[in-house]
Image (tube, rainbow, N blue to C red; front, side, top):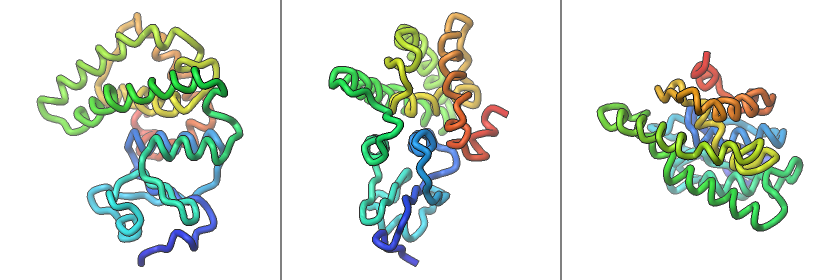
Length: 207
């Protein structure tokens, strides 16, 4: 049955069980403490209502009454503005722009490696090596502040932490000199909101 978004009274998130982009949105929702319906989607066989709502049939997809959003960055910024407490972006334009550029870099330069590793085969070995090199080259960014380029947790951390969480399962081992990245991850992972954001499949990635 095709669902009418106007009939919904709470947020509905269509999400796969293990996907870095979906995890990113779930982490924002958990950090905000926003109640929502969670619809598990197999991306290879999207349900009829998602096909009707989203022309790309992709996840994550967020439905808020008559509003349907289906691009991760747009969803995260919408949630931060829709539910302003706690804020996940700084107030001043310079800091906001810096964090937005950081997220663009993750999406363009880091996330594709995760997808290539997950796909397997010979390209996965190259992607694993490149992701490791990229993270090591970014060590100064992890040292710049308690969180990613910011003294407080932000949307950039919601984008980065799901990737760092997956490093062991991706077979990406970091050397001792990259301990700052592990320390960064642990600061996020200890947050109860991060635990709430995890599916059972994602918890198993580090079990």
